Image (cartoon, rainbow, N blue to C red; front, side, top):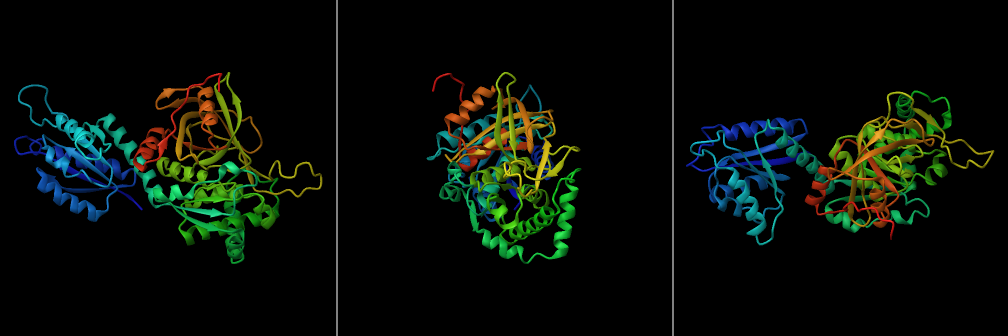
Length: 465
């Protein structure tokens, strides 16, 4: 479902918005930006009073917009803003500067932007948080603020309309991954629960030619598959076909899937590669080990960044270098995967003390490419944690998928690894962290505000408890 943003220009007869082509200029500019982000702009003719606002509200309600952008194209009366006191969607107020710095003021829009937002917070019976925008579409600051909002709205859209597929149970003894589905449902998310028996029934319907196609997809995703058992490749292809079909059948937006021990018991594989490729083929990420909070995190991160995120463990800390190692046994992301050096191997730890063990694929082995990233988590305490950083070019690390992260920022301020760990540990954040390419913390924070999810503020490291 595409994000729809309403555009409503406000002005008054005694000022010169029309003569200065303010409305057409702003509408054209915001539409150009929206088109690059798969956002639809829905506009209504300019208004000058509360009566016009009433009619505009009826129009936008029928259009089922997700956000309303009020443009102060020139001086506009406060009764227009009062008409939106009980408006259900989030609001943004956009004002433009005058075209000249002296003589008679022609637009006087800046003061109205201030007045409208103050009305929302001081006059509305229920104060409403409204984002301010200022400038013309070609100005960099305005483009950045609009971009963040459009990203946040993509996240809000999947929260309100997404479906989480839950396959099996959480991994044995991972008690902290238990999730309050009732709260997530109150935000708008839906849940579909399937058992491995359900999965097996669908897997039995898979055709040979479908398996062949997915085998080619798997082999094409790595440069080195020489250690991959053929039996695992066959079963992994069947699992991938089945995941695709169930995703389509139930319109699943993200999965929380029990990868162990179920897939070893039923298919004699580790499904890291099929889970990764589902995100590439269908845009639907998978949180392994039955992690519902991880699936929600992946869903939001992917929608905001429009990149494939993945789920990692916190595997190593180097406080002297201000560097953390994120690692997992083989699930990955095509958007973090390097151009070369990718292998598909048997699981590196499965039953490894047994000299007679059966080698089971399918896991990736590679180090992430060097790129800016955001690390985040929708935690089971119903808060969102996030910090930005950069993948450091380092091929070392444990067998599996991995990345060394450094240069941390939180809310545009540099932070130390100690602060991050203090926050994670003191808040009891679960041991799965999401990493996604790009710096999306601002958009993620705005998404949290719009959806009503609390934000987890970064704490300052202390030697005490």
